[in-house]
Image (cartoon, rainbow, N blue to C red; front, side, top):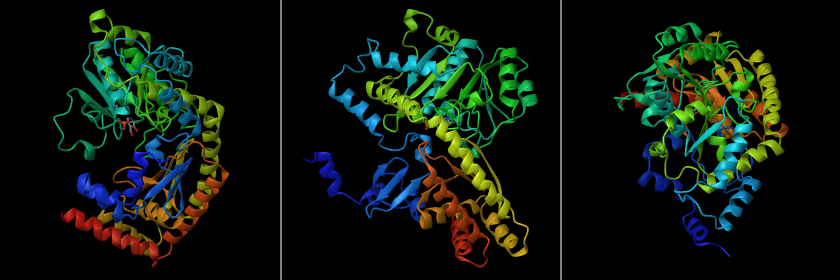
Length: 462
Ligand SMILES: Cc1ncc(COP(=O)(O)O)c(C=O)c1O
């Protein structure tokens, strides 16, 4: 028997773009139509999306990292159904729930041993907001340091730590006393911390925009400097955490012990928004230091049963299916395969990453005809070439991927951690063809380049 919502969906099938054009963000509809991503997906399973015709798409975007377990994982669905059917009391507020206690206990077993308390919230940005407030209150200092090109979310506090102007422009004034330092530069960090007036240094262990990896000694040195100057070291693992980089936390690659770890995305199991801050007991006890301050920070839906059950199920699946190990192995194999393409194609400069957080960087060619075409594209809009990879990957090979950031020729792969050998071969075979086509001039891909240049120039002209 179908439910009213199922009937409603059937009646309105295919109206997605018309509804969004009329009632939501029209520009998003324009973007998707322009780049040919305007498909109507009707089903999803594991790392795959399906359209009404039954075409299968490999999702290398995983909802910006939400679907580490793949989509619609049966064990997470079963956990959520159990909670719904158990008629549990939820969000009583003047109470403390069992599920949030269990998830906190389980998460802390996976954290460095210096972390012993958890604060739950509803999203990555909320975890960042909490970290800013907790750091200021704990240290009684105002300044927060973040890294150039960093990304920590788009609410006002998180935006104040955003390293890209394109997100910030026109939304100011942002939070005062938030200062950028270059990523991977311990000397600059030392300089910025020296006055002992910085509450926290907030850093992604591997930067999401561009997939920028730290040099081996950067994070250990940053952690040491923070300790030396009394600054809290906050690792934003919202994208890199829960196995993404082939270790449970990205910081585990460098053995550092932050004062706070921020997480969200994959902890949701792909279903219920959630965020969390794991922290030292000193931070928790400093902020929640008196009974009249027991609710001094929080939000209504945090710790709700569905989110907590999804989190517990997600951690169980990661363990049962050895997804951290799979991310490490598949990541290594993909990077090896990509390296052979780097060796063969002059436009493909670098493949880098850790686990299943991978960047493909393209750069100016040396041969004359390709160089002229490349320069034309770059003049119209810096970073446009990367779309000549992502668009045919999608259109001709049904692989969904993304450009790694504004103004850069970097394509990013962030697949579900469940991908296997078939998916690896699908990606490498498709890329080989797409990149080979980019070296044919004139050719269909450079015709696409001309169209993209036209769109870019029109957009610039307003
Ligand atoms: C490193 C990092 N921090 C914070 C956020 C913000 O998370 P959310 O979108 O859940 O607010 C993101 C989102 O992409 C992220 O990648």
